[in-house]
Length: 255
Image (cartoon, rainbow, N blue to C red; front, side, top):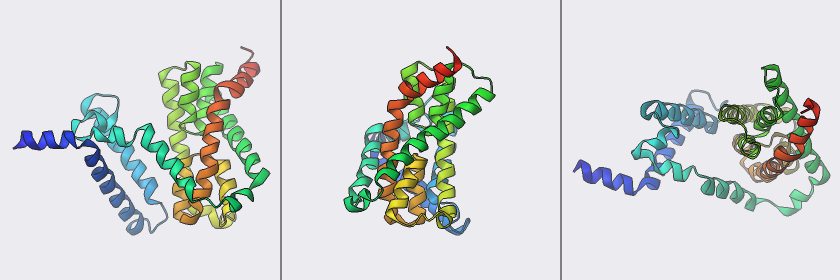
């Protein structure tokens, strides 16, 4: 009986993944509503739970993919893979009102440029202060401060070491969580209450997961607009990270 059950679970890995993630989201939103009174969004709590489970799974199995290394949860690797992730991100843009999107105009474009440059400089500066001096490491960690997707993409293109890649991802994840938690707290103070400001905000912050979760906690109607510019931000970051930004750092470091 147990063998039959295990075989069924193994064959329905993706279905099990949806059940597990659904249970985590339910628990996260319950904690958000009843323990934090909505001050910390459920998505932020769910990400923390996911990180803890990934650490536990990796510790138990000695593997490198967290809970995915456990046969019971192998379907999470499919659910959390690039295909479904990118589909979910792109799908959010279908609710955008084109007329509203046009209102962002040049301001939205400038916000993306500033949004990429500023965190990159801060991330690279912090990396330099901790002893990293080669252009590849500085660029990779700085790109991680842009987003946790831009960081590893840049590092892979430049041939960065695994520890530097890990730092870039960790930096990006920290940024995403901070944006998730802080957005609903500061929204009223920065005028984040209309599609245009949401697009500028998405262009400045860039981290799609952080922006969408933060806007969902602020006003769900703003999510597609923030997702639109933040997704474009990620694409631009992946292009300029291993090219323009790397060349700039290399010229600055004289190597």
